[in-house]
Amino acid sequence: MAILELNGVGKSFVRSSRGKLPGGKVEVLRDINLSIRENEFVCIVGRSGSGKSTLISLIAGLIEADSGSILLEGQPIKGPGPDRGVIFQNYSLLPWLNVFENVYLAVDAVAGKLSDSDKRQRTEHYINLVNLGAAMTKLPRELSGGMRQRVAVARGLAMDPKVLLLDEPFSALDALTRGTLQEELARIWSETRKTVVMITNDIDEAILLADTIYTLTPGPGATLGPAIAVDAVHPRGRLQLSGLASCQKARRETLRNLTTGASRPVAGATVVIH
Ligand SMILES: Nc1ncnc2c1ncn2[C@@H]1O[C@H](COP(=O)(O)OP(=O)(O)O)[C@@H](O)[C@H]1O
Ligand SMILES: [Mg+2]
Image (cartoon, rainbow, N blue to C red; front, side, top):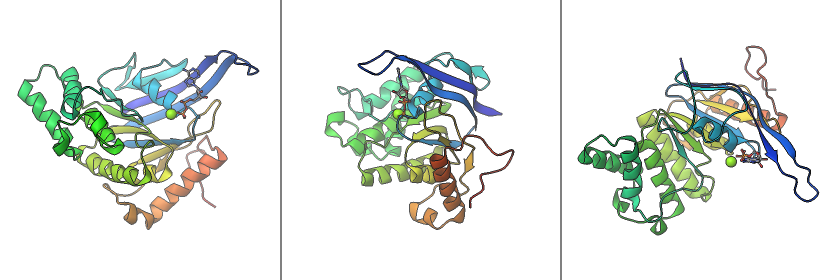
């Protein structure tokens, strides 16, 4: 059974007129269908402005769909909840709390009934997992961008949600730091096997991490292309991937869908590469 299922989901925004730009209804997402298995790592790749954050916000329950249904373990999503942890691009840490406290707060919010020592242990476990054991008492302003985003990852994982939602978590980082964090996430994910939906505009990031990639066609009325399977064992290394035929194929399919805007699977077939 799918852990997360979207059926015919659509979302429009009403935009007020600005200067010469007319106002009116703008359809951002149209007929989004997505079925995600437990322990699957799904990447959704799309251009800027295509509706990726809108899609994540719908799954997170931060906004409501106009049409269709979103089901988590068969139940409609009615709003935000601890079963879906979200990690955004801009860290969103509380500036007056140190690393430990930022993660502990989230653990306490979802597992308030645990004993204090259990909560502290869980907090420390996830901070160590993202290699920040030596920075527990540092404040966010004392950390680099990469370290801050590691705290956000630790916080998301420590909440132990059923589905972890990541909205371009590394896109604000410089290329080298981004590469390091991507490989760290690949390692952490193969240890935790959490169900993940990750938004990215980086195809190589998707190939490194995902079991399945979907492209989002450019909006308005953006919709998902056919599933592209990335057939390689986890955790993956960038060098090893570059030589794998299955990964090169997934890369070509993703690029092709992004450039042609392929939005419908050809009856039961995978996309043919010419
Ligand atoms: N709350 C909102 N009100 C009006 N328009 C919005 C709102 N949120 C997003 N949009 C519009 O929807 C489109 C998709 O936005 P977004 O989902 O943020 O794209 P992406 O994350 O792919 O860059 C954009 O044109 C954006 O201006
Ligand atoms: Mg976005």
